[in-house]
Image (cartoon, rainbow, N blue to C red):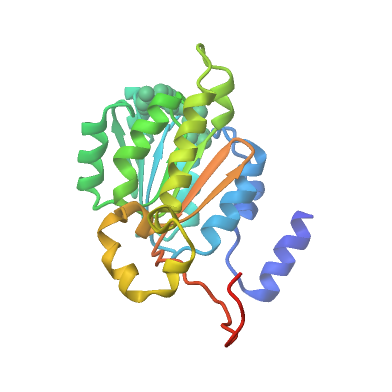
Length: 242
Ligand SMILES: C[S@@+](CC[C@H](N)C(=O)[O-])C[C@H]1O[C@@H](n2cnc3c(N)ncnc32)[C@H](O)[C@@H]1O
């Protein structure tokens, strides 16, 4: 299998995918579920090679090294961990900041220091309260993707916090649908004047949140530009409205 991949790459002259890099080198220093690698392979494939990436939760530094090998060497990979020992995993383009992910001031200063992040991965405490606090702090300065890992941990916490996670998810779903909430009907979407009048009711996050993807233990928020929804409807002259 590995030989086939290497031969295929040699003939197509393409760079290895994230999954290929992961499986070609043993990584005892990483703590991820297998399907995350497949997902990150897909997610990163569409991104520019030079990124500023933040991962909350450094552990033994293995994932930071994987990201730094995958993205171009002028990328900046930043790790956050509350364990001071993680500072030892700093390398040329890997920076580690020691602090608590629940400390919003710390995260917002860090984000300002690096000019925001293209990608944020939350693999820290896995406490829902921390996941929400970090998201609320960092989402405004995240440009491409925000990933929360290990959301299954919400089922294990005492008291169980899956309701908080569900509420959080519904809030983001609401954000995605702000135009429809403002409209109350689909008819408004044919009216450019109405759209202009209601621009101020639309949050900055709605303008940038493109999708929310939910998979086993992972939430992925893709960011970019998300214009008001445009209805494609063929109007038939004289036909009764339905
Ligand atoms: C699952 S490990 C990270 C694994 C690593 N991202 C990887 O993929 O190999 C979780 C890390 O989060 C750190 N951590 C736990 N609670 C934290 C908090 N409140 N703030 C910052 N880091 C925290 C732990 O010290 C630990 O190193």
